[in-house]
Image (cartoon, rainbow, N blue to C red):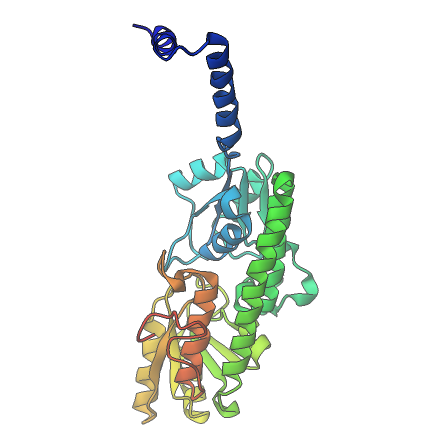
Length: 335
C-alpha cells in the first residue's frame, strides 16, 4: 500500500471528507515551512597566521566565520615557513589575515604574491605609523609586536572587523556588535594591567626577556625593556651581549628574568649563571607568552588570557601585588 492509499484509507475509516483532509494537509505543510529554520549561510573560511589574530577573528566573526590558525602554541612566527597543508588552506581561504610589519619574515614573499589572487590583509600594516615603534634592528621597518599593548591591539581588532565586513557586507551589523563586545574586554584587560603593574616598585620595573618583544608593553606601562636577542629571534646573542646584560643585572640589582614560551631559554640561563659567578642571585620569574599564546582550549590560549598571564606573572615576580589567578580568576594554578 502506498502512502497516498494509506491516507485515503484513514479518511474513509473516520469518515473525513477528502476536501477537509486536503485542507489540513496543506495547513500542516505550511506550518512546517514556517517553523523549519532557514539553512544557515555559508561561513567565511578565514585563515590567520598566528593565534593572536585567529582569536580576534573568531571574537569578531562569531558564527559567521570558521577560522584556522597556522601557528599554534610555542611556534615562533619570525622563523615559521608555510607547509604544504598551509598552502592549500591559504589558497582556498575567503580571507587571509596576517600581521605584516615583517613579523612573518619567512612567509612574507608568499603572502604578498598570494594577495594578487586572494583577499589577503596584513592588519599591522594598516595601523597608523604614529602609533608604531621604530627599532635599531629594523632600519626601514617597525616593531611588529603590537599585541603587547592592549590599546593598540584594539586598533588591530578594528582592522579585522573592517576586513570581515569587506568580504561579507551582510554580516556588518553582527561584526560591529561582536567587535564592540571584544573591545570592551580588551579595554578591561588594559585597565587591569595598569592597575597591578603600578604596584611594582619603580626601581624594579625592568623587564629582561629572551628576545626584544615587549617594547609596546614597556611604553604602555613605563617599564624598561631589555631583550637578550634582538627584535627578531633570527638574531643571535653573542658573548659580548651576555656580559653586558650580566653587568646590568648586577648594577641594577635585578632579581628576576623571564623565559618565553616560543624562544629557547638557553641565553636566559647563561645570564643567571653569569650573575651567580659574580655572587648576584637571579631567578626565572616565570614563562611569558611573547610571540604565541598558550595551549589551545585554555584561558591562556586566548588573547585576553595570554596578556592576563603575562601581566600577573611579571607583577608578582617583580615585587608587585597581583591576584595569583589573574584578572578573572581563570589563570592556571601555579602560573
